[in-house]
Amino acid sequence: MIEAIYVELWWLGMSVGDMKSVRVHARGVTQTSAATQLVRLIAEVAVMEGKDSMAWGYYNDSPDRINVPVKWYASVSSKPIVISPPYDPPVVEASVILEQALLKAWTTGEGVGGVDVMEGLSSKGVLAVNTESRFDELRCFLPKSDFSGRVVTLAASRMDRSLYVPMAAVVAHTTGIVSVKQLSDLVGKSLGEDKRLVIDRACKEALVEEV
Image (cartoon, one colour):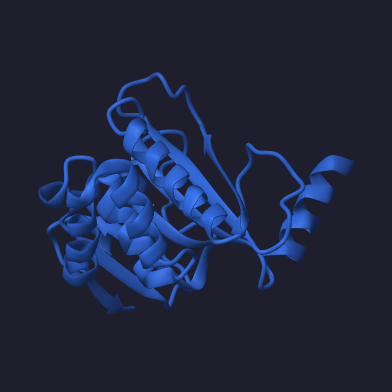
């Protein structure tokens, strides 16, 4: 109990101007690699910028079950991070959905208790969805909340098979948690110059809509 209280207070203290977190919703096994690489990429860029960071997975169910909904996180802070995962951050600045159908999982009760992609999302945060649809077509699947931030849609699957490069670009572009330039530099050096073009294209083609 004491440890739980400490964790909650620590997150509340760090979230004010210091801690910024990103949550990624994905499918177990089929999208585990993409989700893992996405949060690791954000964490690595943060380190390049002189920040502290961490990336981890959080499972409500077995991660080895094919297509079961899973969550991955990246947290970035200008101060040292002094606690270890796994746990659910109470507030995230961005909720990233790697598959459009995961939005429907809330209404169908898929997974353990459904998948509330809005849970803990900052009221002024970013909901980023890999989809070819516009937000108006997706709105009916979202649970009610006081969210008044931005919804970003991008057909990432058509852009790059990895998924994580264009979606990481969207996170950087819309939240500023890490810089697009540093992201592009890291991706270019580690994955090849063609991936820089993917980042540029993702930033240009992402459709940002105010809720």
